[in-house]
Length: 434
Ligand code: CMC
Image 1 (cartoon, helix red, strand yellow):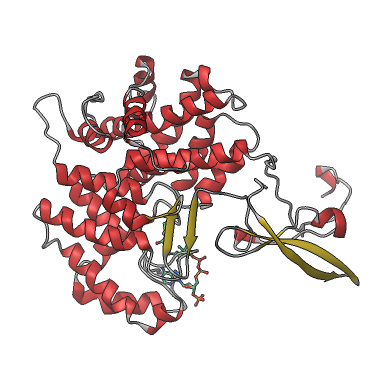
Image 2 (tube, rainbow, N blue to C red):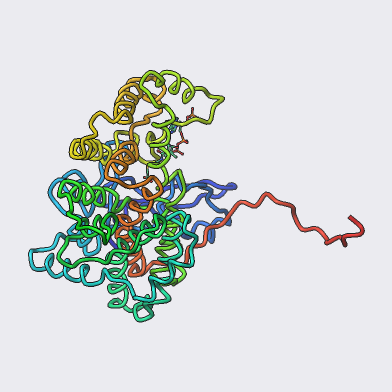
């Protein structure tokens, strides 16, 4: 442990007629933890927790979630305040360093990130190895992993300065790679970053500008992109972050670790949910079809789920969803799409579900993905880019969590155990005798 946890007493456990005392610790806020690190050595038994629903895998000082109250804090600051008053680049500094920057620190940090946005010229050729119709997430996973083949000078994870350089490179180059993944699959030439633009504007330009004409960044859309990035920047020990930590626990280089996080994020139960939520809205198609759809969701014999609803941790309204809903209205107004039928379906669906006994009883509330798909689509992104945008934003969270893990004196290689239910030892039988 990083020595910030406070001893709270002991928990007693009776197992096979013997009694064991297990230390209990408390964090600054949130549930206590029972320390089971010596559990196996002392009792000869493992704990069993598939999906880690009751397991704190590490000590962390980065992000706090109170799922019952619908609270999300980055380094103590509520997400709604950061979304309203901060910028993504400032949030990156906060997540990495623990405190908000002063004006000079922010200026220096912004400059550092800005001057790392270019990719090695040879890297551009790397994209050509992919089929033109490759999913941009497939390109992201491969391209980010390949960064370690281009930036050898920042791979030593035991060197704090090299770790810092890799962090800056990842935050800076991720939008450039994401925009190239987009351009490659849409058959358009790559657009280089521009140092005079801020982080979200630069990204939008790299995605949407074409050499044939000038491109002016719409400030409302740039602000929306920035807020989207802030909302997705970190979410404590979610599946992709835990993947990054687990990969990093073996000493793997940061680019390889972040590539593993991207691969995990791709799944529809995680980062792929905004894509699924938008598809669901299209499938419903019209407000009049909602009652039938809700009936299917509630049918115990059907697999249909209300995508963008429910969360492993939030048993209340996802605080990010509230901000996302406002953002959605602002973007649709800006692009003149307030009468988008999907928005009408989403709003009506939300109203019905929030008052329906099935959802109320199971504490199923809208999560961030419920409104993000409609918003991103209105901004001009195809559905296949949604998870890529999530990955761009989450990179800072992954890298902050990875750095924290590397500096944690109690860090060990991650190695869960299992309860084995397969065959016990048996002798090999040659093929002719089976
Ligand atoms: N629609 C209908 N019923 C649901 C839903 C849903 N979206 N989510 C959960 N339930 C029901 C589920 O059927 C179960 O009911 P019962 O007790 O009668 O069997 C109960 O609620 C508990 O569900 P669970 O699957 O045990 O809950 P979980 O914590 O394992 O699942 C979840 C969390 C996010 C995977 C799930 O709520 C879900 O599939 N939601 C839709 C997908 C989605 O929007 N995912 C994005 C998550 S937020 C993005 C992120 O942070 O990465």
